[in-house]
Amino acid sequence: MSQSGTLVRIATYNVHKCRGLDYRTRVDRVAEVLRATGAQVVAVQEVLGQGRQDAGQAEELGARLGMGWVMASARHHRGRLYGNVVMSDLPIVGHAQYDLSWHTREPRCCLRADIQLGRMVMHVYNVHLGTALAERQYQAGRLATFVHDRRTRGPKLVLGDFNEWRRGLVTKVLSSTLDSIDLSRHMRRSRTYPGVLPVLHLDHIYYEGEMTIEHVHVARGRLALIASDHVPLVADVRLG
Image 1 (spheres, rainbow, N blue to C red):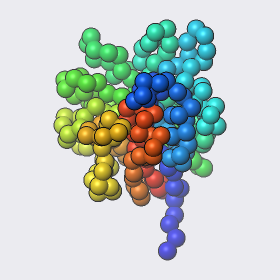
Image 2: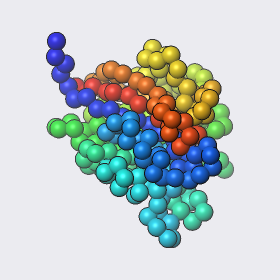
Image 3: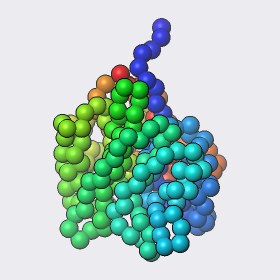
């Protein structure tokens, strides 16, 4: 029996400024880990962007993978832009940035990238939420408001590092309005942090619209276990 719709492989990956567990900063390793996933759309967190001397990790990752990219900078880190990036070998036809900063905590943001899939546009929301409970509660409410803006039409994916390893306030808020991928139904080992001996499940994927989650896995190749302090979470999504 044939299946209709468009199948897209997506991944979310906190690259930790491309600094591995061996304390070496190597963009080439992170690019190789992402290439091995086969993902067509990648949401990356903790990326260093343009600085005074060069274009930064976002441009180098995009060039190594042959992907277009957009970046949302939450703040500066040692003279460089710092934030979230969405990369894709599919056309990125639009993007937007939403502020998720809360009081005096570290500035945070959400990046929306609009991906063209034939006649359809898929909206990918890349997030990296805060570490404080009250901060994440505020951010979850803000995020739900952005995602449910009816002016943005089409299927939507919300993914990234949510800094929540239990079914807490963020899960409760987002699950009340979005569908959530229950990773325990797809795989026995769903934890993504830290890379070598993962004990926490910080990376999540939520979605809205006509789509089916066909397969989910965590990339655990030898290089993935050392290239960052997280490992990529990968999902095959059929739209339509």
